[in-house]
Image (cartoon, rainbow, N blue to C red):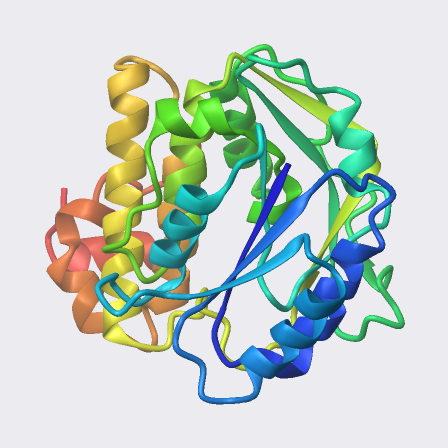
Amino acid sequence: MSIIIPTYNRAHFLGETLEAVIAQTYQNWECIVIDDGSYDNTEEIISSYSDKDQRIKFYPRPATRKKGASACRNFGLEKSKGELIQFLDSDDLLANDKLEKQVKLFKPDDLTLLTCKWGGFEESSNLTKRFKYKYNSYRNFKKGANLLNSFGNYNEYFPSHVYLTPKILIEKSGLWNESLTNNDDAEFFSRVILNATKIIFSPEASAYYRYDSADKLSELNSEEKVKSAITSWKLIESHLREKYPYGNIKYVRTGKLILYNAIIKAFPAMVSTEREFFAGRKDYNTYFYQFLKKFKVK
């Protein structure tokens, strides 16, 4: 198994993340950490761990490669040797038995995607404060599109470290889109999910997402990130249309609504520029309907 961790100026969190990797009850892994050009003491932290544990490998992103987490993950995939891939951000955590519980459900040469429970945390001393104990998507699915429908129907999602992904499934689905600076995980895993033969949920495994990290890439705090988010949802919609031309796209409609609500106050001009993208959802809410009328979107 290969655990791939992109990092950028996360020295203050990286130690906890690596400790969570070392503490895994499943021990047959390599951990590939790719530094995206940090200017804090990231390299020093990684080196202190790799010196003690040869399974931890440090690579600076080559200068010839594009900057960004997606490019780092793709570089990590090139270096990886495992049949299974665990993506992990450098400020998030895994339960000690997360990998062991999921590996038990894996069959070699299979395109099954493995999922688990998850929750948010602010301090590693309290990982259960915002844990999502009940989730409609906590179950098996006979095909990947059904998981996306569940996300759309119940306004749910899985962060990327919930998944344990066969490398052959990634090879079938394609690499991370390095042109996206926001929502790249949703775009990548939409392809992975749609290409999975089935989804197997492990009720005993858990992943933890850190909420208090200051400059999370997922925050829509710039026009560049908003444009990337819009592009990502256009791509996701095209992936679904290609796979299921006449299928339900509630997942995309829900995603567009959430995106609209996130940017309408901070970047209203960008919403008007993307009238066609946001059009046709008059049943979302009254405010959105009035906005569409104002710009004469039908």
